[in-house]
Image 1 (cartoon, rainbow, N blue to C red):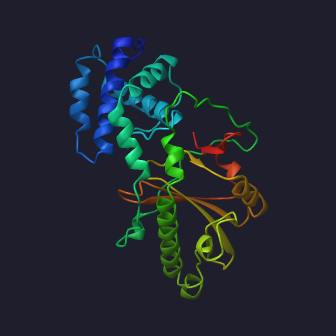
Image 2 (spheres, rainbow, N blue to C red):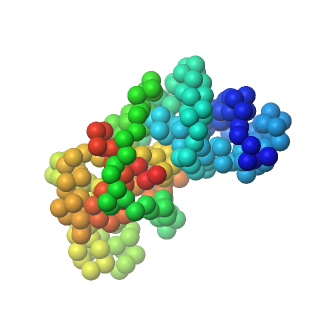
Image 3 (tube, rainbow, N blue to C red):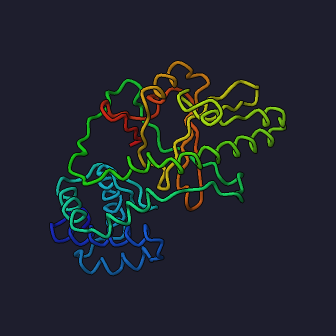
Length: 280
């Protein structure tokens, strides 16, 4: 019956269960998604596993639009009903514990992990959209109590730890290409020269051309939006043949990254007011 519209009671039930799982995840406590789904099905008028999974993706999209982290593994699906957003907003505004957990998750200090198998770090980027000529959409984020994604972006220790991680990854990558001299020239320029250059790490490609790498780090999934500055956007356009966006995600668990070459607005939809960049 997945084609039948979800009732208000069903939406209330699945949102409550999603927020419970998210609270457990943010607290670092283990839980079984399958067990939660089986218990939930008894409240959902026989909804199929795929229908529940799809709705979880809708909830993830709502959470991101509201400035919240979402559950890992539930890929955001943005075409959701207004009822779903209304229910999510109402429930999160009643959950003080979730607010505390999300705040702690985005504000706790971070350090760059030492023992990393860099051969397993590279991941695929989110599906690209043809947005080069697309007007940036305006989204209203005003109902949220806090924008946790924005707060994470202001976590200086997380940003620096991510940049240090990318410096080490670039050093490893160039050594793997048999270019130790170039590897030794990789530079953490946001620390050695200041953070106003429009990029964080100077590296090189296989031909020896400079790569200007801007690092954006999150503890959450690859679809999590991030924030850019006007300076970063302008520099990415001016130096687009050399500019690289490096998105480092799930940093506190198992760090993964993907890299996108060229101007930032070729890959991301940018909010014209906040410069919030999103892939979906």
